[in-house]
Length: 519
Image (tube, rainbow, N blue to C red; front, side, top):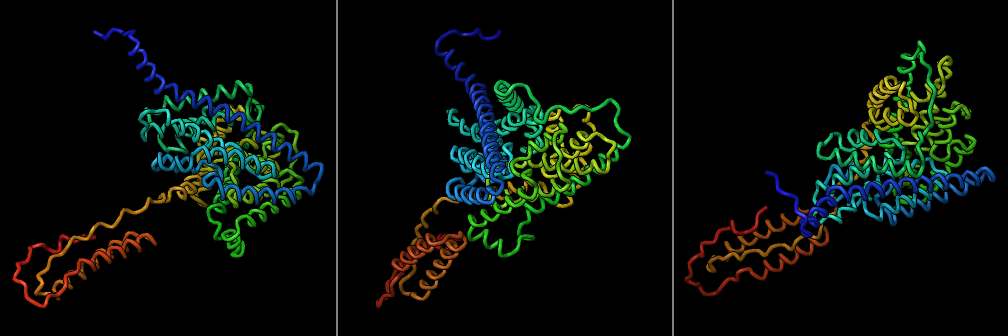
């Protein structure tokens, strides 16, 4: 027989606490992620609009504003917000694939959360080519990770589930793409699917998505493209060529970001290492010059340009994707917080516009959709996430097979040039954490030697000293290790047996050299 349900106050309280820990904390975190994602998106949009107003009124203003903002952003990031640089997705991957508690404390703290939002907002005020989707992933993961304090006995499993759910919910709320959030968590963040985390993950994504829909309304990120019933005869050729072109372009972009030492001139590398703020100002000046050459189209994330191409309201130069890539690289070399999803989609749209010169009989929105998914898949090397994101953003269910094929081919082509970008960047955050101060060197056991054999005692003492010194040297300690070695030497010298003038008839104690510490 089943146990009858008890209505005693103590039982009700225990059940309520258990339900709160199982569901309530995750729901609370998902609501917070949805709210922050929407407010962050509005903040970034407002900041870029302000920059555009100034840039349109004063065409040469970016030559001053952008370098100044770059210098300030890099100084703030290096001085106060180490770990907030770049997209934010590599930091989440590093946390999930390492000791979640230790790395999360360093890369997903409230300080990093605030710095990510504040400095990326400052960067968009300067017209940098950054997106908000990657930062939203790190912000969502940070929000959920810090809820671990609400658990009386938090553990690694709970922390990992919180980080994963927060990151996926952040992407879902940023793009309004719930399916992409689930696939992104499986394919990019964990490379696996844990059955016990599936319910938590999906629930968090749904709640964050509902919050975003409630504040923004039901919308598709890039609108809805109209695809006819009959596909063009050259669709297969277009898919193949688009995948190859975008795969090469995305692979080259990944190679440039991961191999800066091979193509950046030595004086600039030295400037970056010794004076990073000055290097950032130089990158900002380059971005401003490229923006002036492009007529202002390369500033910002590129969302407006991609949306304009899809709607047929925008006419861009055939050089747009290449200029946008230069601006995008210049935005990431200094280490300014910002994402690469939206700029990658914009660059892909530019390649679709370029390929329309070859496939003039095909609909431009179709080519743009194929090129967007191809370039994003080439940069991230996550083809399933890429085609699901683009499919949801353009409501392009009729193009599912074509988008999937383009993403898979482009991702494979990109791999010839560079490894997966996010995983490679995450490895740089997986370096060993700073170790705590070393424990004091243990007391050297006293070596008893017959006083009538002073030479043998001195030899044994010298061997003991060599073993202790080898231990200290092998531990890799610096100044603290040297001081510990000096103290050990002083103790050894104090314990050294003194030769006696008169023989002492004492028997050896039987203690062996094995009592001394050994490596």
